[in-house]
Amino acid sequence: MKPLKEVVRRLIDLRKQGQKMTLLAVCPNSGAVLEAAIQAAASHRSVMLFAATLNQVDRDGGYTGWTPKSFVEDMQRLANRINWNGPLYPCLDHGGPWLKDNQAQFPYSKTEAEVKESLFACLHAGYALLHIDTTVDRSLPPDMAPAIEVVVDRAVSLIEAVEKERKLHRLPEVAYEVGSDEVHGGLVEFDRFREFLILLKKKLDHAGLSEVWPVFLVTQVGTDLHTTRFDVEVAKRLFDLVSPYGSLIKGHYTDWVENPEMYPETGMGGANVGPEFTTVEYLALKELCVRENELLGGSPDKASNFMGHLENAVVESGRWKKWLFPEEKGVPFEELSKERREWLTQTGARYVWSQPAVRQARGRLYENLREVISDPHACVVGQIQQAIDRYIEAFHLTDSASLFE
Image 1 (spheres, rainbow, N blue to C red):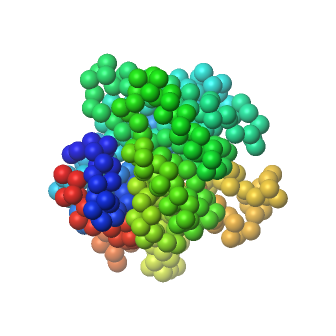
Image 2 (cartoon, helix red, strand yellow; image 1 turned 135 degrees about the vertical axis):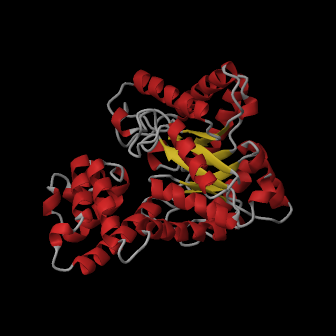
């Protein structure tokens, strides 16, 4: 399998020949999503990237239970199970200071040290790409972005540390992605992003790291947590800006995007999708719970109560609080409207899929349904795969694996 840097170079060459594609990066926020993505890649004979955050996959197991090493092993195991040997690239998403929830109160020196160890773990596990994101600074007021010089210096420092570790252990070349589309990062304005690129190039060259210039650069292309319209004009302008550097723009927050077919047309190199697949998984399980209720009828004592266990786990995790509206701050979960409680449970489900009570209830749900559905798990995975298929097709990735051999 070719290094990801060579894949991006090939992608650029293909575009010059009139063949436009955008690489899909699936965020593996559950085992079912990972399984569905590999099946989709095999079905379409497509190259596939996986963008795992440190909250999801890390040395402590993250919220999925995967370390970088066990994640890569599971990815390979699932691919082997269906005899797929096409290009699958494990990648780190948002690797940087304070980007892991449990490091929010750390001083910079401690979070930097933790991030370096996580980057090294990803490197040793065989990750193909590391997203270096130094745009968060929790020592500043919430509405203040760090200076571009600080963002660049910290990014170069992390890349330098990774390259030193890689060369020390004679590990394969790794690709880099740099930047962020978060407003708090201060890089979403075109002129500031251009300034960032100029300074990053200067600092990497000065550090003797010009050969590891990032293959992907991240900034705002119109989409975020609350918007789903990809901005074609902005993307074209950014493509023109980064092309001379030999890089491509990678979009985050591609979930539910209304016009995914425009990504290849505008030269977008990659796109991350994650929360959308959690919602698909949640709704598929909710549908199975309805079937279970119909099947059991007057025997509620045998029911899995999966949705109840899921909601309890989300509430106990406390993660639902991060999505509260200002007027909801301090309101107990049970006092929120039914619609809001369900949305918060659906959105926070990815954080608790792997918790024992949720896994046990899911297993019981599946067992209760085997009388009428031979493989309930396959039904869930199948629905997630359909959602992934939509992006593979829109990004012109069908039969793309052979193009990157």
